[in-house]
Image 1 (cartoon, helix red, strand yellow):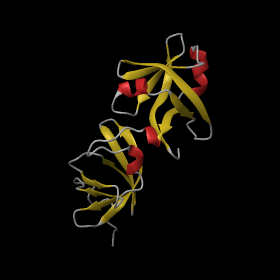
Image 2 (cartoon, helix red, strand yellow):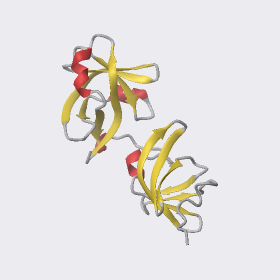
Image 3 (cartoon, helix red, strand yellow):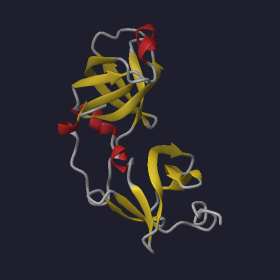
Image 4 (cartoon, helix red, strand yellow):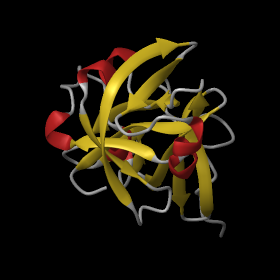
Length: 176
């Protein structure tokens, strides 16, 4: 994924003309209408394929995309669960307090007393929103990526200041 940003993932065929139902990883489904040349990346990151978006439209909270050369649902079966990626240079400018999920990976969680609580290993969508999967001294734990908990993100210093809720605030304390 070096030099690229994932903007969505191909979930399933839609209809009989080769449209793909896309789970968007961007804040606006209209973003797909602005794209043409993209890279499709297999779930294991071993294969890539250049693709051209012919059409894109919103439908039921997802994007429906028609790729050039894909004419039937059967043509899509080989690329289900592949991500749609664009060069970082084509990424949109973020507003203040917006972050690309991949930028959060590797950041250190630090509480208001300056104690390190762990390192973000992954960011993923949970039932209630984004979760940070953190590797702490006593093992992994998840932290909601919410402004009440993650009070400051500093990409330059590579850290997130946190106010961990009860139950999470002692997960990383090492027992004596």
